[in-house]
Length: 167
Ligand code: CO
Image 1: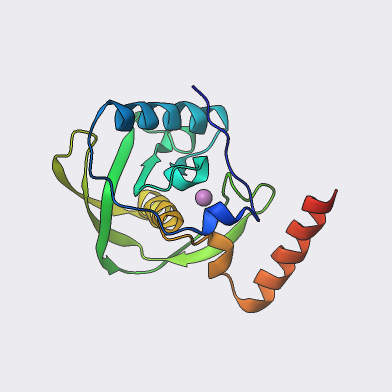
Image 2: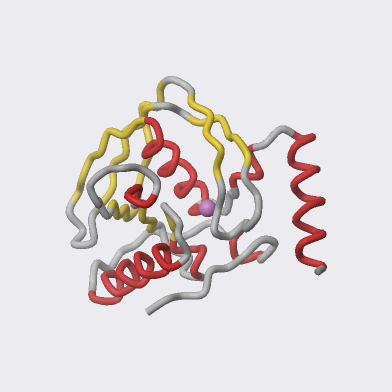
């Protein structure tokens, strides 16, 4: 089932999401619906708070963006550590339509997380996968990629978004 994606400036995007404690059929259904919603919107990542479920859950699937095998990355209760290097990539967000800006991120990260069954997992990611994970992780803390721009760029983007919303 496709879910509605909340868009800027919706205040629900600013909540800090809660950890998942139950690895049940509801969680599996949410993840399946998130994949369907993300693919339908041609995104490469989606976090649960973007579909109004304030849980520490997000998905990443780079197969739309890169010529690689389809891997449905699913992260529940993720923790990012060991960030090294720097990378800047033009990011967009399904919750901030019409905006693409470069954001500074770590080039390599380690992610400890649980899968949909609750099993502990570790992933070492770099480049676009690392960028996507950091972008989606921010959503769990109510942070949007535009928050990470310089003050001048942020002001320009904000003005553009306000104009869009008023149309
Ligand atoms: Co986003």
